[in-house]
Image 1 (cartoon, rainbow, N blue to C red):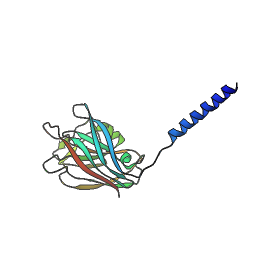
Image 2: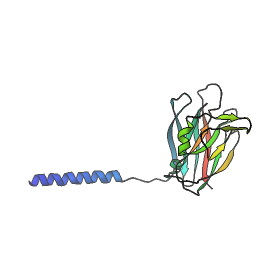
Image 3: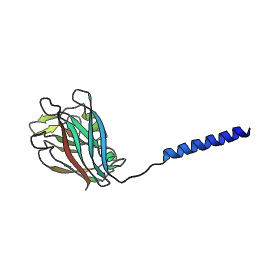
Image 4: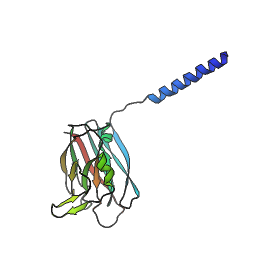
Length: 188
C-alpha cells in the first residue's frame, strides 16, 4: 500500500512538472522575423511566400515576396506582435516598387472577410475611373500601379485582423520571377 501511495505521489509530481514546463516561455525583444504564408495562385495551386523584416511595437519594415502574376499578404497584427488592431488606431502604410523595369503591383489592405475572398477574384481595369477594381471586396486602403514610393493612412474602425496584400495578378505572360516589394507600416 505504501508503494502505491509513493507511486501516485511521484506520478502527480511528474504531471505537475510537465504542466508547468509547458506554461513557461521566454520573451525576447522585437527582432527580425520570417513569416511563411500560403495562398492560392491564379491556377488554384497553393503558393507559399516568405516575408522577412523587422517588427517593432510601433511598426513593420519588411519586404513581401510576390510571384509574377500572383499575390501575397502580410497579417499586420501578427507582424506587429499583437492579437488584433483596435478601433481608432491609425497607421501609415508605405510601399515602393521592387525595382526599375519590374512589376507595378497594387497594394491592398483588407479585413479578414475580404482577405478570404481575395483569392477568388481577379482585378479588372475600370477605364472610366482609371483604376483597378476588385469586385466583391472593399479594401480599406488601395494603392494602384506602384512605380514610385507611395504612402497613405490606414484608419481602423473595427477590432480585428487586417492584411496588407501586394497584388500582381494583372500582368500578362508567364514568368517564374519572384519580386521583393518593400513595405512599411508605422503607428501614425
